[in-house]
Image (cartoon, rainbow, N blue to C red):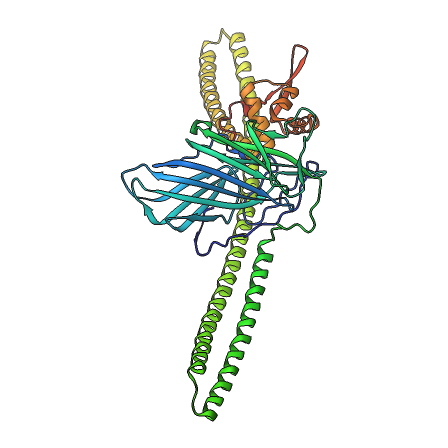
Length: 499
């Protein structure tokens, strides 16, 4: 689903406030958009290639600031160059993260934008107010907020994945105040990838990466494990919920309006006093005249400000109404797909019943043919009867062939529905489960220890996930020598793209 808004309707600082999550209780909390996975959301986009056609990235900076409420404020800054011979009025970016309500800024202005999310990748389409001329450059800023990936027993984990372009690249992650870098478990790196630098200003820790990116790398992923060892009260960088922010903003505007009304009434009162005094004195000196003119000008300015505040309140009310409508549409879409899934399962069950019936009929026909053959051998002396029996056998063979063709047709249909069922099952897997399936597919057969070494997850978590996948018929365990190996089941061996 693609949502398009004008840049004026975009409201900086709109944030979804989500509950904390841990490894034992993996709950998804998403307001207004599709699923947000718990860990390594970027790996869902394994086969996604971000492309900016006709543009050359001259500079590429990513800044991530984490506050004490587990909110990540991420900003991507791109300096782009028009490498084409024609004007470019629209650009497209595929970012392997899930977000909404981005804050977009450009020297050429942002006319409108559109978002679509699929399998953990957010596609951003943006239209410039002023087209980018051939040979011209502009700086584009993409800002959004999201939750950290894991908060488990005080240990926190955040990962940041961005598309890779041919350019000089820097990334900076600022930890919350009072946070320290920790290792989640023995043998697991606290920070990845390597070749990073650490700085501090006495309040925060800053982790930085600087390198020359290659577009063939598809994407760049960094991760940090940390814990808040020195809590900061109150959290000075707390980010509020969408509705809370709008309410605070509305209350602030209301307070400003009341203040302006008081000022207007005071100015009117002062103006009346001065006018009355001028009538009594009959003559006003130049200083009094200037004061009256200033009061009149201030009165006009206050009236204009009051009108602008009323317009801003109306605009906020429209934004709130639009968001409520979008939330309802997403809920309706979810219910529709649930009904479709039930219908597909019923169709598969009916086809399996028909196939069983056809196989039973085939067995009965085979038995009848055997009986006919036996009778022909016993009644060879009856030539005329033999010819009739041969004709009967011919007709039965013809009917058997027809039935077999019909059975083959039904088996093809069942295979198609089985493929659809497998794809449906894959679509509801978590990113962690998809990651493990991709690793097993790449290796053919692999042990649990090798999966732990590759992914960095704990042995208990890998064992629990493998057991769950085996119960659902996605993977199966085999014995290779003295080792226990894991491989994909037959229904999923031939699956192509599992991202």
